[in-house]
Image 1 (cartoon, rainbow, N blue to C red):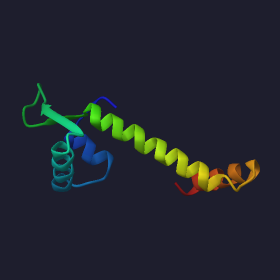
Image 2: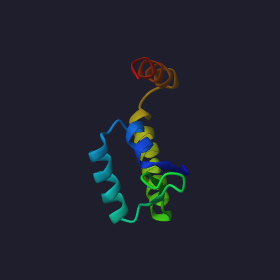
Image 3: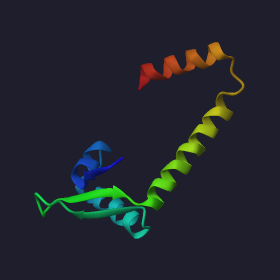
Length: 91
């Protein structure tokens, strides 16, 4: 959501600088993100999603929701709550 520096993006997803740059370059080539120089520090790149990137994120979230629903569907409500409780413990 919004903009962030390429450096911060790498830290948030626990990737080293070179790997982050490679991922950013590939996403930019697919027109899923855009980048611009930071006005306060020209060495830094500011990254943001394009409309296509936002659409892809929305579609992936919907896919995830559907998969979760299908996976949890056989469980009773109490079992779903217990499973989520247990998952929170290990995350």
